[in-house]
Length: 469
Image 1 (cartoon, one colour):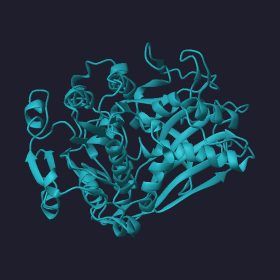
Image 2 (image 1 turned 30 degrees about the vertical axis):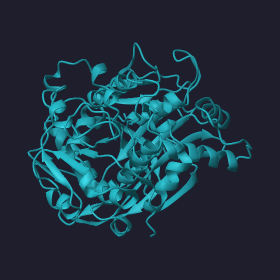
Image 3 (image 1 turned 90 degrees about the horizontal axis):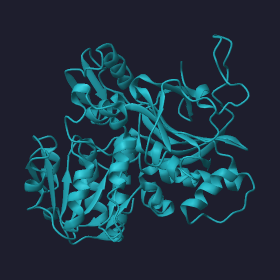
């Protein structure tokens, strides 16, 4: 693989957090950005990843950022023209964005996070624990001409927003709709409406298998355990489409903001939906809250927010690796108290792949999945210190960082607002097989012979048909 230098960066770059994503993105940054190791500093508690940082000659600061110390820790390390890359958990995204703006510091994160302990004790109402609320908090920081802050740009959220745009263009081509590539938010929404797209799943299947199975009292995952548990315990959230006619009995609307999404009064880790991927065909997946469920639905909305003319239903449909599924099952049995031991599958992955894409449904061809199928062997050959799951995230981080460096005065921006073709061109060499496939699957396929279920047989694309009772 020829390694293209995408940008020369003269400033300093501080990476907050150095878990599996930080460790995987470091070699990509040094490979594709003209930046010296001496320009990079990693801020993270403990010595996790110390050997990898030393391998690349990058300095580490042993510190956990808190509301009391983040200004003191970051001020000596960052100034105008520098970059803060936030790959942490338990550090407020909005606080860091607000800190960066008056100082002229560029910013990117992969997920919106609150400060550690924000949700402890169960005192906050469910609505305030949603990604919807955190997204609104970050978007409220938008200022014209402010330093660029790319929010929620990993694999998902992030890369999948670019998959959606490419999938829309593919469906238009394959259904004989000849239209130029949209150049505006309204243009993309009108294309989705014209195609008849009613539902979008971020449909993922992780088939990684480790060299040793999960043990009792252990949470095993292919990426951050704390990150997965944290979002799994938030309320399930989904963008709510204009075609929906059965509002969930446990659903709630938001009183303010974009109005593009709703939440359920139950955690995402206990909410299952029917979905489909090329890896396994039909599957029961977790409806875990993710920012893309809100941002994509919002981006593709036409008309007044409260009474839109068009909006698709959008949500994550995640089937993690089998050990992670067992871990979630045990977590639920422990009344959602996380296991005492945590293990990330990385170097001990024996086989498997991550199949991550978007499933667009309701159009003339039925359903269309577009995305990446990346095996562990392909990931290891492409970039050190990565699994397939991490590489789909880390290459999207790289692309977002480069775009921010090239466009330093765009203020707070979401993945949906970035040029999908440019981002995909940078990412594609690391994504294994990138492809699209049509399927005649619907959530009503093979239904009705085992159980007398309450389904809407007149319209297969209703959310009540996807949800597992």
